[in-house]
Length: 219
Image (cartoon, rainbow, N blue to C red; front, side, top):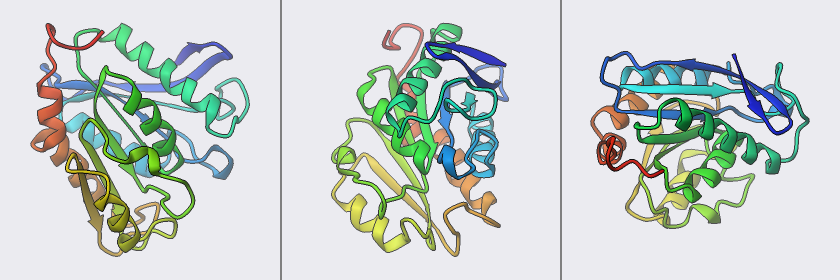
């Protein structure tokens, strides 16, 4: 499927929750476009599965210039507009569902910046945060729940580094460190899925989305 965008279109994939009573809807962003990242990257695909299983509709999409999405790579700036476009589509399709937003690596940096500033987004997900490559000061004291799932051996943000960073981000941030996992969670997708599913099914993500309803979802 394709979503209309100011620069043309975004290639996307939408999958409904595995329930007749979805608890929310989410946008999930992929890793760096110039390093092979797409909406089909395994960590993104498996996390989307976990969110579906937890009761969320999930929209994955390709950033501008990836796959059949139009446009060209814009260093993370134009990609934020792509996230906003995806959110708008999701809101129009499911106006009464609370929203979540997340991403993997580069996609987490882009997605979280948008999600923190959008009052419609009630829960955030960051996978494989590249804490040793990017300035993460914008994550200081987020105003909404954030789950961070990180491989202990992540080459762009190993366990000790992400733990030091998260210490200063406040009590709305939950960190799950996956033992022996690298940046891409190779051979550890089950642990990744378990962490994401649990947070959205029983943890702070579920509680945040549960505060949204047909009467209270921000417009």
